[in-house]
Image (cartoon, rainbow, N blue to C red):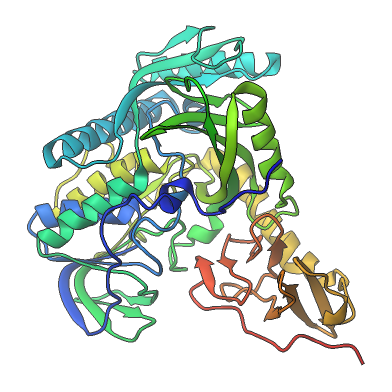
Length: 509
């Protein structure tokens, strides 16, 4: 296999997204609504609030659509693998029906906005499929079809799919959609700015003080004062609300293969493991197939290049591949009770809100959440708002919550008992990382391909779990709550807001 040219997502690497970089916040700002996070959740929320008459400001640690939004497969679908089976099991048919209605409304809202504002984002309506990758996945397909029908979706069970190989069974839902997520979200950011709103990049939020008004603190220093604040980061960055105890963070992997011939005219995903998600993308003369899967909990000892290699092998087996120049990974917040969050941050919050927990279907769920958020901010209420209420109680989800917290406890305590992997930085090979232990202290040391050493404290700045090295992406990842850091300790993803402490690489005597 030829080495990939880029580990940046296709949507970001192709450079087709409009607009120059936005400025960092440089002075104090006063607005009606401050939104933290410039992915699809935050930008859509801000646009809707602005259209309700609010003056808005959006802040992001990185760039607009540069995080999870820019790394998605960008399927916009009400059929979401086996989501309805899971919701039906935990919450029943009524909740599943509300979830379906919210998903369909989100798709139609995007469709109308793209048409009205003429946003060039490769928007296309196509059927979505959940298919059986093997005989064991046929029963889950049948269960999902029954649950989706009970939720009010007009699905069909079929053995015909646009895949270049036979599928034993599949659930099909017509008139779903896909697009280029970066061009879409940056297009919305442009609408906000043209309407007088503010969008700040490279402006990390380090704290929020709720009150009348609220104050948002940033790493550059200036403060945003706002009547209301919406946290729309992939994983909620504030510890209040205990979202870190009710969510799991997962990594999944994607490759973009340039192919000869026709690509599947549809969006497809397996009903079970190993997950194989497939969609097409046509860009000028190039036809691409995106293949995703190989997911695991963030920080697990499973993050290695073999994940990408398995997806590339699948693409080469089933398609006439020219090359595979892009491979990347993404992260998703997964609420333990199978539903996203959109509403008040805590039961007593009056001016602090959250739109997060997209569960691998963030393009749909973040948009539905933004519609809910707009109603909250304007004093209205959407019919399905209760379904995504962040303060709901889900008794049937208790075993999964307990399992998630057992995972956290195992790492919080157990990782501190593990021995070091090297005695000094001298033993660290190029392109690899090692843990060096000195008493109770642990230093993570990475030697880059040029031989330069990068050393950081392994203590996550969120709640103190020990990070692990991700061989697939060359990052330090926290197994407890999904915070991610680059080789020099800078924050890539929260809930952490502070970097890892940099250290001198421990040398041999």
